[in-house]
Amino acid sequence: MQRNLRKRLLELLFLREFHECDEIEEQNQLYFDVVLPNEGIKNDNKEEVLEKYNKISDVLSEIDQRLSSEIQKWSFNRTGLVERNILRLCTYEIFYEQLPEAIAINEAVELAKEYGGAQSAGFINGVLAKIVKGKS
Image (cartoon, rainbow, N blue to C red; front, side, top):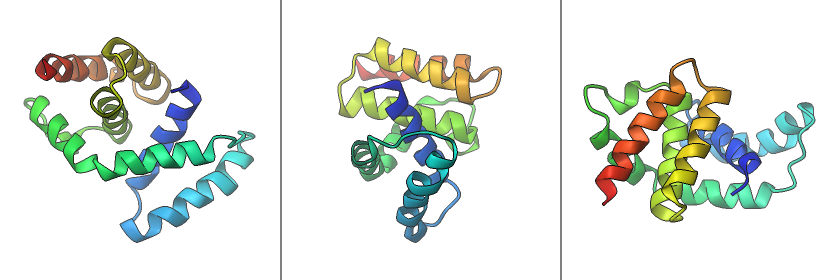
């Protein structure tokens, strides 16, 4: 998956945090029709992004369960919204798309550097290393 697609997915997952379930479809539509054009971003891959977003949404509770079990001494729900959604996206890619772990983790760390705080990349890398170790 291209990095731009990952960015769009991360932004949609992040947006999801602020809306009720019945508002999500409308908010996603506004994202593609208003937000991206206002930022000068083409949404050529809208269908692909939405398809992947829906696939992630379908297994989100499983992903969250897996992440919750790996984050020790910290509640997954207390994790920052950016970090939480980067972890969700990467976990999906590793477990449901079988993307090579090193590639998925590297992409997640790059997203954390761009969207997260100063310590986000290290946190993301550490949690994902535990997830991958537990996968074996």
